[in-house]
Length: 306
Image (cartoon, rainbow, N blue to C red; front, side):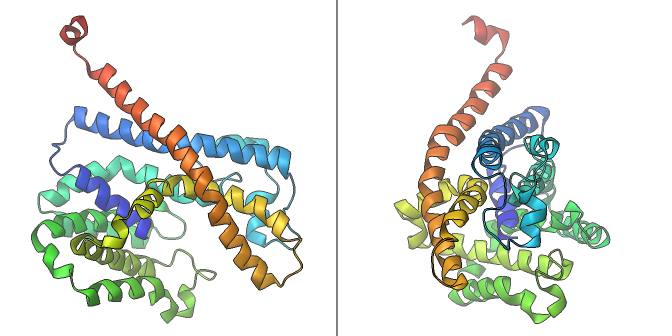
């Protein structure tokens, strides 16, 4: 939910002074396409190599049912469909990227409606649609993006209200632990429980406003900034890296708890440098290519002659 709300906030902020037109929509969509897809396709290719060559079977014995269903027995058709952005056997966590891509289609319109003072009614509509279409529908996440856009709008006028350290910590803990209030909301019971999704999104928007308004110094450090830059690649690659590491770590003569801890640490340690390379060699060139393509497609004949 933090990821979706942050996406709505950041994208709406980038559209602050942009009027809605065919040209601005084309630029926005092209930028999103080249921001998401180059790294996505490269990560899918890497996952395909792993699934077909390195480890065509389960990396460890006693894998969970979820892992078996999503990654253990890939079919060629499903693997190929992953390259279109569908969350299938190659990169199961990619479901949220699909949500992000669909939301990108409506974010410009959400930002304009919020900017013109219709944020409240728009949120009410999103809540109504999300509540009545829950049960696996991607529309249940629409309120998260609206709340992110609203957060940007609220920050301009009332941002100072969120600078309190109490507000920051309360929103963080509420976002993390609200779901524990009801056993029916637990992730393993109902991952898409609508009430906690909305509350988590609301708390995420408040938390983001608190961080931005307080200008947290630790988040402005070089290494933390770099981690933010490569976070998309980490998200795309960590599942494949984790699967590779699990096969090796499962052989260590320690308890299951320690193997789990070691797996998390090693996955982060290995994903960081690989993702850094992905960011420099794939993400940045992809973004640059999108800008070049936009410039070439929007050049006028007179400009071309010059």
